[in-house]
Image 1 (spheres, rainbow, N blue to C red):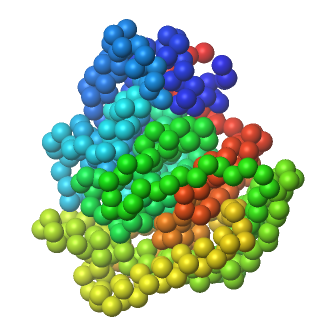
Image 2 (cartoon, rainbow, N blue to C red; image 1 turned 90 degrees about the vertical axis):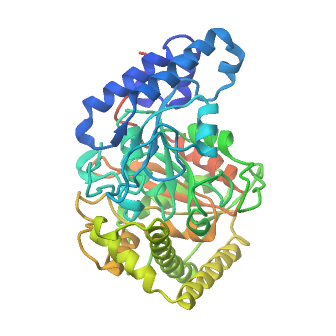
Image 3 (tube, rainbow, N blue to C red; image 1 turned 30 degrees about the horizontal axis):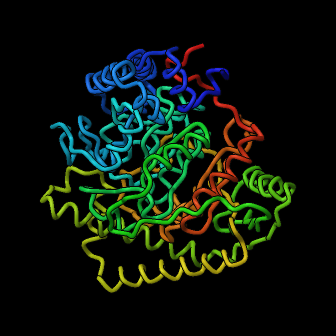
Amino acid sequence: MSSPSFADATELAGAIKAGKLACVDAMRAALAACVKQDELGAITYLNPEAGLAAARALDQETSAYPERFAERAFAGVPTVAKDLGGPFPGLPVTAGSRLFIRTGNGVDSDLAGRFRDAGLCAFGLSTSPEFGFSLASEPAIGPICRNPLDPMRTAGGSSGGAAAAVAAGIVAIAHATDAGGSIRVPAACCGLIGLKPTRGAVPAGPSFGNHLGGIASELALTRSVRDTARIFDVVRGRTRGPFADIAQFPAKIGKLRIGLLADTGQHYAIEPDRAEAVDAAARLLEGQGHELISLRWGDVERAVEASALAFGDIISVNIASLIDDLDLDMRAAETMTQAFITRGRAMPATALWSSLNGAVRASRSLWEIFDTADVIVMPMLASAPPLIGSFPTDHSDTELHLERMTTFAPLASLANISGFPAITLPFGEDAEGLPLPVQLMAPMGEDNLLLQLASVLEAEQRWQHRSPIAGFPT
């Protein structure tokens, strides 16, 4: 068994299955960690009774139905759901907003059911910015989520609370969502693994609408590639629309064509150490016998611009529709959210249609790149995680807000708008000990290829977790 600081959810589940830790003891340790690390702001809502009840039920299953218990991928592992996304029973979401009251039991979702079937025990909600409209998780209603690696910096957004909870060891794995980088950006900020699956690979129903027109995906933030691969295998498929089930291809064997995109142009220039990490990851794969293909910023620039425009338009129209459908008083929302509502209400249908057409062309241009490359290695973030307060929402300049997010993560929304899978993982650390993330993107249905290559990069051990998992037996 490895050191607790290097453990993951798979190893925690193994310890539980081996009888070294009871499910209830693992849950109590996670709850105690929440109290101890309250100032981190990772958790916005707790339901200890629900978590302990789920853990007790699994402890009973160990003796009553041991074979069923053994088949659960993450049997007895505590987790938290995001305060935005497919709901989990007992955990009523507010999307980080005063517009909703945290009452009731909370409805169920297909994804929540699959998390439970895997043996995961949800006991709380992780912090999200209001409606996920930021790459920092600092909702006006609180709490402010901080990066466990440097509390003066953001943990990212919008799944920042989930990332902070996993990086700090409160939990080993956490539910997360990604509509414009919201899984991958926090993973990159906190030194974690984050996969945005192929569009339609993971269920989004039955009550979470159309998931922003298809740009949003749900999965998890983890401490290892094998955890990501395992949770993806558990929850994927049988999505029941609105998209056809995605055929997942086996990871390719043999020589691959590795596209290297280390340049993000002058306007979105990234820091040299982050570009060097991307180059080093691609060179490592080349050293294993794969062919390296150099890509230029001009190959993706128009697709990046179109993706950023479509993302801004989709979230604006979506929030305007939600507020009107529920007859909510938008004056209770943050100033930035009000501005997006106003933007969405005023947007002509022809303008939205034009940006959606641009998204289709962006997807097509990426398919053409994948005619010559099997995967693209590219940057995830342009800089280290910025200081708390770097993405303020107390103003109404939506264009400035969107530009700030694109400047921080220039290539984030490309995967969401196109539907392609993308994964990020740390590949070294900078002079301040913060992660140097890289991002890999592949054609639709090639999630397994991304996981295979990410595992190769992870095996270099260029990044080590700083915090042990709560309750992990030593």
